Image 1 (cartoon, helix red, strand yellow):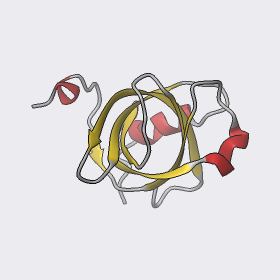
Image 2 (cartoon, rainbow, N blue to C red):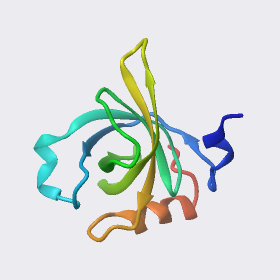
Image 3 (tube, helix red, strand yellow):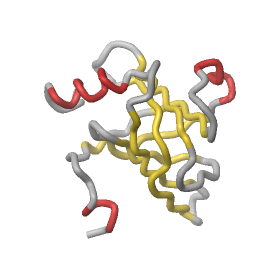
Length: 122
């Protein structure tokens, strides 16, 4: 069992969703949508996401995520930080554990409610 798996406080649900990501060490800026990159989720939970992204990310980087969950209305704007990062040299992708933060202007509360009322499944 890996170290990051042992530290999880919430169950992770395997989930592949296309997301838009902006890596930004500064404050949340909803005007950065055009400066985002595409990425994919690997799994999600009420407090975090495991994402796969085709750009370099460092531990501690602020990350803004726009995610749509199939079967749920609207996009969720979330903010967190890169808790852990692993590069996959074979694919060139970076795997990032994002720990979500209750930042003002985000859908953090709604995101947590999604998992409090049941799985984010189809």
